Amino acid sequence: MFYSEDGGKTFSTQRVRGIHGDYHAMWIDPADSNHMLTGSDGGIHWSYDAGKTWDFVNTIAVGQFYEVALDDEKPYHICGGLQDNGSWCGADPDADARRDCQ
Image (cartoon, rainbow, N blue to C red):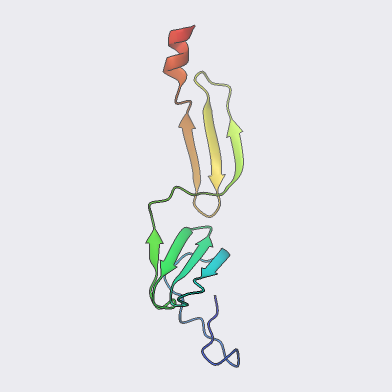
C-alpha cells in the first residue's frame, strides 16, 4: 500500500507496516479520514491515525477458502485451503447425532 502526503507527487510505503498484504478492500471514513479499514487475505485491520498504526480485528470470523474437499470416511472429513493461511481439516460435527438416529 502506498501513501502520499503531497497530492500524489511522491509516495511512500512506510505508512502501512506490520499487517498482512494482498489487500482486497479499503474504506476511509468520509467524516474522519484518520479512520480507515483494510480487508486482505490476512483479515481485517483498522486504523484511527491515518494508517500510522493498525489493529487486527480478531473478533470476526472471516476466511477465503480457495478449495474444499471431502473424503469417504465415516464420519467424513472436510478440508480446505485458506488463502495465505494454511490448510484446515475437521470431522463432520454432527456424526454422533446421526449415528443416534440410525
